Amino acid sequence: MQADIDRVSELVARLRRIGSDTATVEIKAAAGGLPKSVGESISAFANGSGGVILLGLAETDGFRPALGFDAQAIRDALAGLCHDEMEPPIRSDIEIVPFEGAHVVYLEVPAIDPLLRPCHIRRRGPYTGSFIRAGDGDRRLTAYEVTQQLSNRAQPTDDAQVVPGCSLDDLDPAAVKAFLRRLRARPSRAFRDVDDERALIRAGAAAADADGAVRPTLAGLLCLGSYPQQFVPQLFVSFVALPGRTLGDALDDGTRFLDNVSCDGTITQMLDAVLLAVRRNMRTAAVIRGSGREDRYDYPVEVIRELVVNALLHRDYSPGSRGTQVQVELYPDRLVVKSPGGLYGSVVPSQLGVEEVSSTRNATLARLLADIPDVENMPVSENRGSGLPRVMTRLRKAGMSPPTFDVAPGHVHVTVPQHALLDPPTVEWIAGLSATALTDEQHIALALMRNTGGVSNEMLRAWGIESHAATAALRGLVDRGLASKSGGRRYASYELVEVTERQMSLWPSAPAPAPVVTGRRARIDRELQAVLEAIRAGHVTVKAVSQQLGLNYATTTRRINQLLEAGRIEATAAPHTRGRSFVVREPA
Image (cartoon, rainbow, N blue to C red; front, side, top):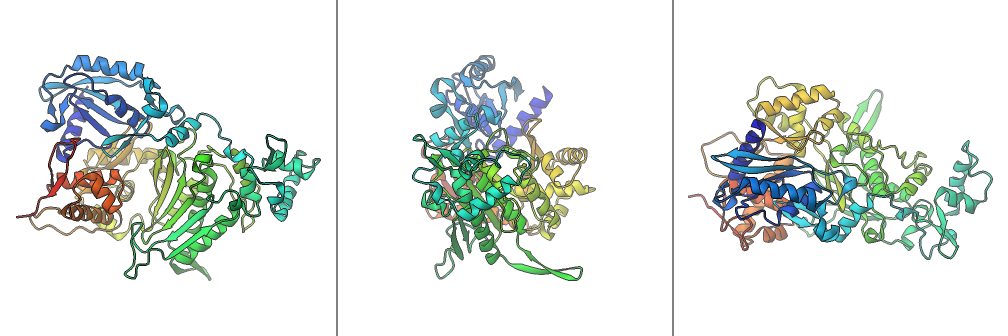
């Protein structure tokens, strides 16, 4: 019970500083009974990374205990909602916790198994009763996102479907010949004693349509086609090199793209074209190794290759997403690879790059790519779940920061920062925390939290730290008040506490040493200043600021909450009030 009391006190103290709910905490007064929207919040947390619901606090009264709140009745009603009205049911303890002379009801909603998603309000069905967290509110999942999650419950076969209007004559004869030669060289007799057509069918590169005509499958066309985009025009890779740090930034002469390439053809040809374009737009530095010279790029080429292959192999190929291509964006400070479709199977975001997880949405395509060589005569993909762990290992050896993963039901975006993990500004920042006797493991954990926003035991293991040492390092940072823990035992994550994360002066105060602002911190500073200027210019709602700056709604909400907490802006109404807007508090 004491742990729950401490947790509630900590959460409320943070919410009072911010002045509103957060992406992981939902507050309701519930003085007149259990609000109907609680079911939407439970669904949203369960379909994401989990979260906390606190009932019995009045947000409009500074998160003080709500008058007329019946904790016992609300707990019983909440238990009925979780057990009887949610699908699947939420099996989590619901506690009545004493707080400031009254009681609140505390529920920690766990992230449910991906194979059971979407969690939805049963009477409304999955397509109208499924939600996801967006900023400090809940957003209904789109029909495409719900379909994506439902498809996790079975093996998708979109890559094994025949392509209408396409015939075996649309396959590249040389590629087919080389492919079958490799298959027939195996010890197995499955491909030896059959003709080419039957061998292609057995391999999954071809299949009979409803009329009995043998045609290439989508996987076969993407691997062996003469020109796949004749039949699937949008299944290519777009590459852009950008001059600024946000999409849409332009040079003084109006140039918005330093390079813009549509990489088409087969998967092997697309991969080759992407790597050529990336090399052309990256800086190189000569490194002497032994008696030879090695050209080192901004990003290891092996990392880019693995990310693009992973995107092409695991993207969604269902009809609803065939109008969306894989995108590779090269910014001055980061590389981003965007893939349509969320994670498949039981994979959760915390496992990405940490564990060798083999969960293949496109099984036929994966099998073909294991027998298709790239330009270096190596298999395009081994399909062993080792691609992202190799990315982490290669970045660690290069001393670079790890990638971050933006995972949603409809997309996966991977961002690789250009800077080193323990660069001089990060080392100086750690030294400025006034924390003595930090271990090497804790230095790495702090750097990861600062550069990526969070860290887990698994991520530290991927960075070469043994599990028991990672656990001790993270526990020590929490005990020192430098980090906070969130999530359950299985998917626990750690992030910097706010006092160490905010290293800039947003309000005139006593002189203090100017912080070093680079990388992620510099980006946040720019976004905070941009939000201020947008509000000054008359864009005074979250939606208006988001549209004006091109920031997503969740990021805009976080920046506004930071400015509210710092006293830099004021809200004209309570959170969740219709028409709520903001004004800048100019220094006297």
